[in-house]
Length: 361
Image (cartoon, rainbow, N blue to C red; front, side, top):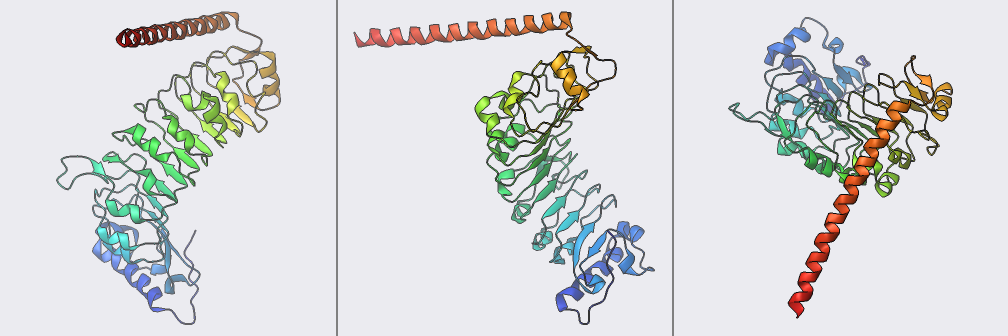
C-alpha cells in the first residue's frame, strides 16, 4: 500500500512529530539512506504507510525489512500511532528500550534477525521484557537463530504466532503456554526437526483454527488429535503436516469435527483408511500427493472424484494387499505391546496391594 499524501487543513502537534522523526532517520542510519534518498520527496519513501492525512499525519506502518541495519532505530519509539512494525532481515541483536514507548504496536515481525543474542555475543537469550507490554495480535519470529525463549501466555491478545525455524530451548513449554489462549487462531511452527510430540495442553487453545507443523519429523499424528475428548473440544479448521514421516492416517482424525483442510503432502503414507472423511461434515480438501500410495479403497476413490481427496495421478482404485497386510501386522504388534504393558502394570499394582495387606498384619 503506497503512502497517502493528502494534506489536512491543520496538522496537530503529534502529527508533525511523525514527519520529523521519519526525515531524520536516513541521516542517522546509513543503511536507511540507501533506501530513502533525502533528495526525494519523503512522502514517496517506500515502506511507510501514513494515515488519511498523509505526511502531515501519523505513521501507521513501518516496513524496514532487509535493510541490513546493525542497530535498531530507537526513534521509532516516538511513533505513537504505529500499529505494524516489520524489522525482519536485519542484523541487530538488541531492541532499544525506547521502542517500548510505541504502545500502539499490535503487529511485530523480527524474523531473520539476531534478537536474543547477548551484548557480548557469548550466548542466546529471550525477548526483552518490555516487549511483553505490547498488546500484540501478530508476532512473527521465523528463523531467529539467537532467540531461545518466549512466553506466549504474556500476550493475551495474540491471534497469530509464526515461529518457523526458530530453535527454542524448551518447545514443550512454548506450546503449553499457547494452551488456554482465548484469541490465538493461527500457529505456524515449520521446519523444527527437534520438536517432538505436541503437548496435549495445546488442545486447550480452543480458539485455534490453523496449525502448520510441516518439516518437523513427525512419524505419527500428535496424541492431541487422536484423543477423542481433546480433539472434539478443538475448533481446528486447517491442519498442515507436509514434509514429515507419517506412515498412516489414524481413525482419530474423525474427532476433528470442525476440520476443513488437511495437507499431508510428501510423507510416507502407504495406505489410507476406507472411512477417511466420512465423519467430517466440514471437510473440503485432503492432500495426499507425493506419498507412496499405490491404491486407495473405493470410498476414498469416490472422494477423489469429488475433489475432496487429492492423490497422485498414478494412484489407482483398489486395495493394496501387501501394504494392507503390513499395516495390519504393525497394528497387531502395537496392540500386543500395549496389552503386555497393561499386564505388567496390573502385576505391579497387585504386588503393591499385597505388600500393603501384609503390613496390616
